[in-house]
Length: 260
Image (cartoon, rainbow, N blue to C red):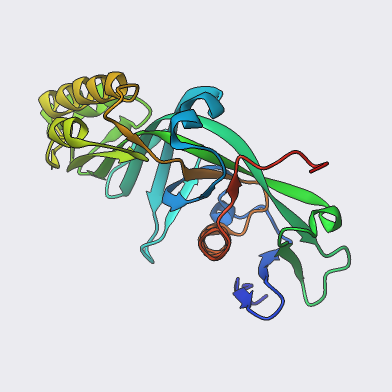
C-alpha cells in the first residue's frame, strides 16, 4: 500500500487552513502529545502590566524528540537514547494559559485520508474537536545530542552530564527565553556550549536567576504561543500546519468572554 503523504493547504480566500491527516494513526511519526514550538506571536488584548496575572498556571515540561533520517523531529514517549541516533531534549519552564484551536474533522474520509480544517474566528461552533495551545512566557533549555555508544537516559539532565563525562554522548546546550527580555535578562543568558556536567549545572543556575528576574519592573514580558498538544496525529506536517495557521491569524489573548 502506498504511504499517505500529508499536505498542508492554506486557503487564502476563505481564511481556513486544511491538514490532511492519515487514518492509520498507529505510525511512530504521528507525533501525538506536547510539542514545544519556537515562540509565535499573539494579539495582546490587555495592558502589558497585567500579562503575568493573566497567566494562571506554571509547569516544567520535558519533551524528547528523535531526529529521523529525513532530518525531521518526532516527539514521543521515548526516554532511552540508543547508539548512533540523534535526539533533541527540551526542558521548558512556562507560566501559561491554555487556549485552543477549533478544528473540524471530516466524518467520511475519502481516499484513505481524513481532513482536519483549522477554523477561523467566528466559526468555532462548526468544530468537532479542539487542539490545546499553550500561551505564556518562560525559559527553555535545549540539548542537541548524538549518542556515540551504549544507551543513555534522556529524561534526566544530570544523567546526560554523566554520559558526557563518560564520552557516551556529544552535543550542544542552548538556553532561550520565551517572551522574556530586558538588559539584565540578556546578561544572564550563557553562550551555547558543549554538553558536560559543568555546562548543565551552569545552565540550571542561569535558568533559576532568569526566573527570578521575570517579575522585575524592568523586565519586558510579551506572551507567546510556546507549545501545542497534538491530538490529531500526522507528524511534523500537522505541526507545520499549526504554525502556519498561528502565524497567519495570531490568537487574541486573552479571549473576551463568549457573550461579548
